[in-house]
Length: 200
Image (cartoon, rainbow, N blue to C red; front, side):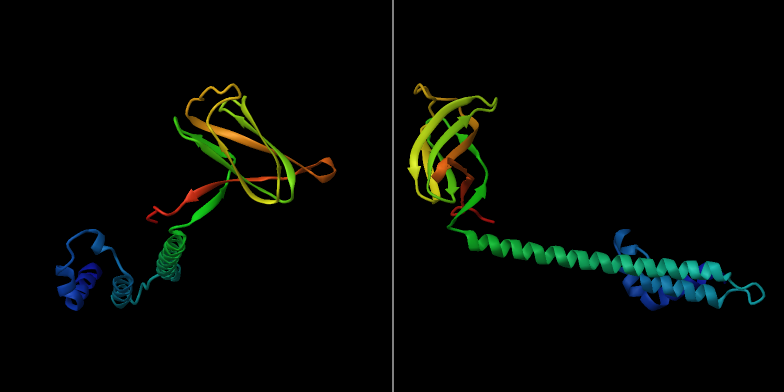
């Protein structure tokens, strides 16, 4: 009996029922137990006058160790992904029914509807808003005037400076704020996302 035959016989004797239940090739991948059994069988039937070379033996053990490390890393990575997914879902559930501010100065205009331009002022300031189209041209200038610090919102009717309706699409707005001493005040624009109808 050769080594391969003995190894297969040994595997069949210890797991005949399990082998019969393996329907696909993916389930027949060489596992760590089968690998060790093959290695032990190889050592058992090696020629005493011509034993396995130490380098070959060490190489096989190294392959086994690498296999185990990769499998452990894969299991840890899968567990981390599952934990992160659960945390994301939990956080999303906590946002249901709320509005969340997303930092951006982009606004999507739809025909027949208004658009709200949101921003935060760190201090009281005189405010002017320039709205640009996708080409960078200023199509509308709004002058809310003096506003207190905090979150602010200005409604844009979707028209240009002449009162003509603008085509629907994506527009960019820039908030120019001037505080005390004629200082330019940094402004944080944001978009309010409504989570009241979100499912995730």
